[in-house]
Image (tube, rainbow, N blue to C red; front, side):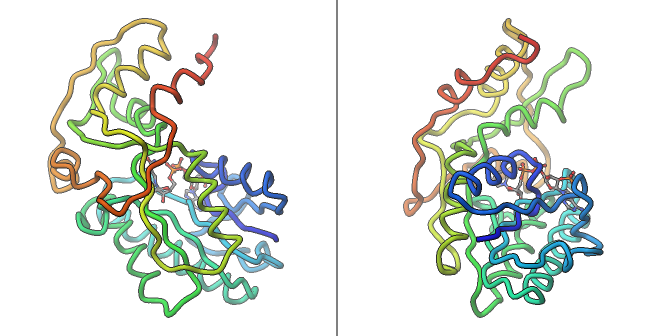
Length: 252
Ligand SMILES: NC(=O)c1ccc[n+]([C@@H]2O[C@H](COP(=O)([O-])OP(=O)(O)OC[C@H]3O[C@@H](n4cnc5c(N)ncnc54)[C@H](OP(=O)(O)O)[C@@H]3O)[C@@H](O)[C@H]2O)c1
């Protein structure tokens, strides 16, 4: 099969590309770095010629409601339309546990994304996952000021991107299933502890991290457990500690 991966150069996207190759299929990476902007859609149909299924793991770094809604709405519509024109019969998308209910800031983009798919009669599979193990590192890249490190007050059950990627590829190579059971990691963690562990791992010594409650509905959802998996969720096996121990130290 030829499988297009929108966002195939990103955090989970790179894992999805590897999983597609390991399963003996042909990946096609759609990202600005490979010359395709899913927002303007130029060249998308030509690039997607011969594609059987699409896995959408593209994203915007913006936390602003309007920007996030605009990104996920336009990207999803462009990918669905291009998929239809090239005869691709399956669109697989990744969302976040709890985003639909929060429906604000970045999660408003994910909620809009989910609704576009759930309005389709068929032809899609939608997986919701918890934060990736890499999320703590994504936060440190965005929330630090000089030597000061911050982490949001947040309850999370982070999951392995290898496990999520394998699930996305399994979905893409099967029949469309609509919304499938959520996928989270094996245990609940406090995000500030994960950020501390990530920073200590990267620097080779302990780092002070200030835990802050983030404002707005997204910050409230982070604190109150709205982003944790519910009773029907499947749990992966790799813990954050296992994952971090397996990472080489930067510049080591
Ligand atoms: N991070 C988490 O903890 C987490 C947890 C659960 C679900 N998710 C979901 O997983 C998905 C991917 O998240 P991520 O953390 O892997 O994102 P990421 O690392 O920020 O990667 C984003 C990807 O999107 C591509 N992209 C951005 N704008 C684009 C555009 N206009 N046209 C084409 N490609 C574009 C980027 O490539 P270029 O820059 O080359 O364009 C990159 O490959 C998102 O839908 C997110 O909501 C994330």
